[in-house]
Length: 202
Image (cartoon, rainbow, N blue to C red; front, top):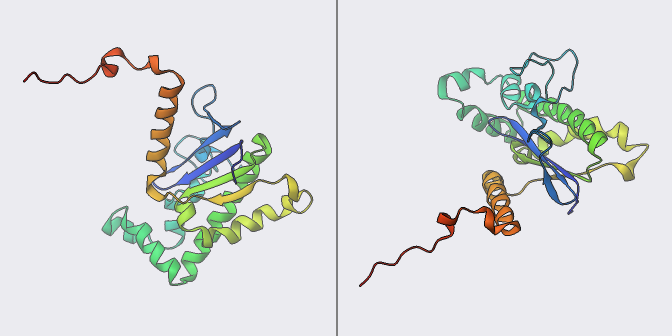
């Protein structure tokens, strides 16, 4: 689907996102539009480093699922990158703690999707990072959380899609944003950068 209004949500080393309005990135008044990680989804949720409570990042981190799956010791002993790799291995082995951890994360993600879609009326919610990698395990909790809203108004709910660019998504997005800015206004590039590279004389 190619919606003109869409929300992108990504989780890997943290939780972030972006908002597309009328086919263009909408950055908001302070450049933070669509940054969903610190959207509060529970009034009495865990304390967050931002000073709030119950932020989405405190549920889908990815540290929270790693903790819920009982992998804190792996993270401490082998480093931050080892724990997600071990969680992935356990998910594919149908470990019940790992599957339950992703189910809970999917439920929290569903609450955030409801909030975002209610405010922005986004036609599409795109999930990236580990949200796409672990889509199969997040989907049950996500669908359960969205079921109540879908029942009375199925035609008004956003389409949920999962990213396919993997780790290159952010880099490609940054490249396209810079390219679009240059094509919109070539004079915005400093003259020195637009000067041809001098060719040494023979």
